[in-house]
Amino acid sequence: MMQILSITDGHTAPVVERVLAAIRAGGTAAVPTDTVYGLVCDARNEDAIKRLFAMKKRPEEKALPIFVKDIADARRYAYISDAKAKFLERVWPGAVTVVLHHKGKLPAILTGGKDTLGLRIPDHPFLGILLERADFPLAQTSANISHMPAAKSCEEVEQYFGEKKERPEIFVDGGVLPGASSKVIDCTGAHPLLLRAGPISPQDLDALTREGE
Image (tube, rainbow, N blue to C red):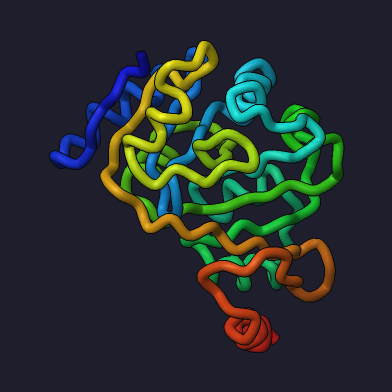
């Protein structure tokens, strides 16, 4: 069975330390985000990343995005101009994954061998503390089996992984989550391009882009 830790009673700090210790040791965790429950691991650890793919039954050619703590951290792993940084300041933190050209500092399996990488600063208190305490980004993907609905509650995560041989070492129960997918924006070109709709409409994206001009 998975080890289940609750943050619904407000005891966040000790849970963060236990999750961080597990991830630093090469483990994986199921955690709440500002959208759905996610599976996370050290984005520098190729073996841990392979476990995420195996858990989800996800094809390895499908890249995984990463969580970062701030834009300065994002710039360590992706090419971000000052103009793009200003745009990111308006959409982060939040449920927005941004695709950028990466600097090749993370395992190739994470990016599916592509020259691009998805990055996001999540707007969730637990994840914010976890990322601040960590000295590395987190590879992340929704906590479900590929092509199945994303988990929004503790019960749904347990249904997917509770009895499986390949499962997260730790599950953090953060209550019932909103359940909406993040928006995906391609920022590899001169202007942001909406790849997947989410909490920001195309009209909002256009307005945000004009603000930076």
